[in-house]
Image 1: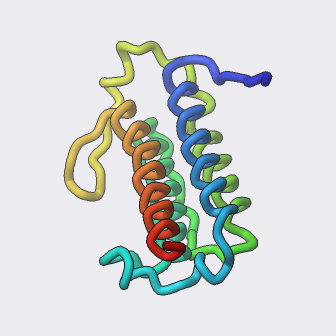
Image 2 (image 1 turned 45 degrees about the vertical axis):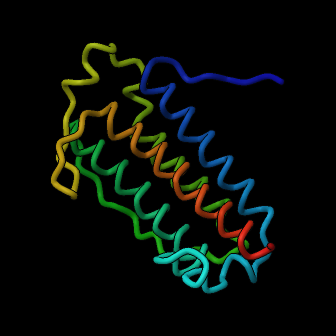
Length: 157
């Protein structure tokens, strides 16, 4: 298997973000459209549906990219990311990743010692470094992919 790796620490985090999204897309591909849109709250409290959850993942992903871009002194508008129809979710995740990659690409090879000097205030009022925000983005997808897996196990028995 041939794999291309982006250069630098920021490039490595983008690689991991992409990998996390690939794992989420795999889980999504294993469910039916009915499971994607089903009321999930009875199974996982607070989870409206997998469709709503993916809308949250998309919106957050665009948000992380806009926070990072602003930290680099280039504020950009956060794209609207409503929940995607089942047939479009994989491509919508790819669009969010491409948006993020466009923000990060000029900064892939920032020296390690500079990663902690690029900071931003998260909307939840916690200061983050570039490294922390990108790691948060990766873990955010992992956490919600896990919720999807738990939902599928519960609903399928």
